[in-house]
Length: 578
Image (cartoon, rainbow, N blue to C red; front, side, top):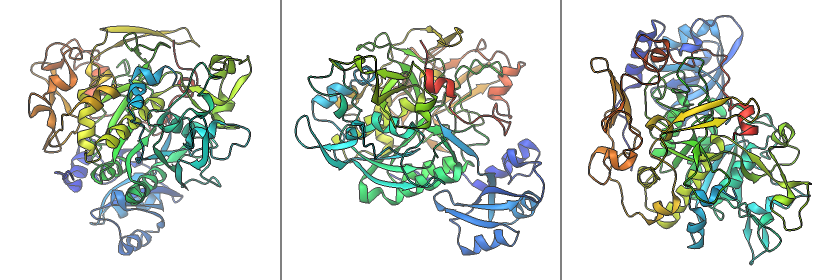
């Protein structure tokens, strides 16, 4: 089902410009930039760009670099001094910089009931998952870990046929092989079959959520974990182009950067929406800034782009507490919280295990070199005759980057079971069937600093709840309509924050029936104040007079500085928390 957009980019650009008192067609982080030096920008047009549009930019001294038609845009270099004149062209809708983007199971698998699903034959067979990340390690000659991404031959053995069925490199690196380590780890969570940890010689197995799905490796982050909007957009664009050939039904984005404008104008979000409308479920990491109190918001309003897009399934991180039951699991305090900047979309949509998740190791990678003892996995942890020597196959990492592929894998299982499901129906079913029983609050301790952090279990922290794969597979509910994430609306008169199911003029499925009603999807435990108000006047960001309130509900975003680090914090990525 293709969901029509009910907004005009030109009108939205004008509105944004009026709000900031600046050029309405130039993004806020380009305002005031000057000089003759060339800078990389993404120029959006009213239609997919043609040679005429490229020539228009070249007439202003620009140099064409890449086509980004999926976002009705292209990547150019141009002098900052020429931006104002370029923006005055009627064909130009919006100009943004080519922003930097960076990377954001033994217990985790049972925590989301994936082991039960697997026992009934749901393993992602036939489904292609596009991994838009730092690549996948394919050529491990001294490690068995890569066989985790191969096809099974017979019980206990692996074939030499890799399930990484396609690879393409969009970075300056020489190949699509993963020199960073992030993408390989995510691939293992998505689709690892546990070859290097399954059998009588092992006490624990590290198996992904969809262990027989195919992986389409689209490398957009280099060996340092760095990328840009344009590389990510090109990866998404390629996934759409390859959809039919490899049956790509799911796209995983365990990466992000700060929010600078409405999702309606953000080229990264526009690309995500095109993938969604092409029939691909897009799953995005929420970000790891839930501890950020720099604006007095206790980490609220820190969802990263493109996780701020209401189409995507945005995923926060839980801690599986190293137990097989899920009843003791808690939110990871670093998991980013909503509402989103600028648009106030209610995010995340779901939470899933993301803390200290063990998955595939990419040898000689950046992540391995940055790891400490907490990340290394001694062979005694999972081998009958193991020792204190560290595994050459597996590594433990933390972050919402690890939680997102849990949901991507779950989506693949649903689509294996019911191939006709649309992205909206997959999203709605995963959210409705998510577990909604949580404590009112919990306290986490950073193992490095000893600092404690208190988390509340509200709608902006856990969304619709904790992923439950088996419950989703047993549901027969099929949503009819859009599953856009709703918007939080502040009423200055009542000082209450409530939910509206209308985004961009489209009424979402959540309020259409008892089956998909708001309380059925989000449950009563996540509401603060009453069943209709998600926040009262005593909300964490306080009254409208406080800086914290303005940083969430005002016109200026937390991420207003162009120097704000867009990465998932390395300290969190490496260490996790207790």
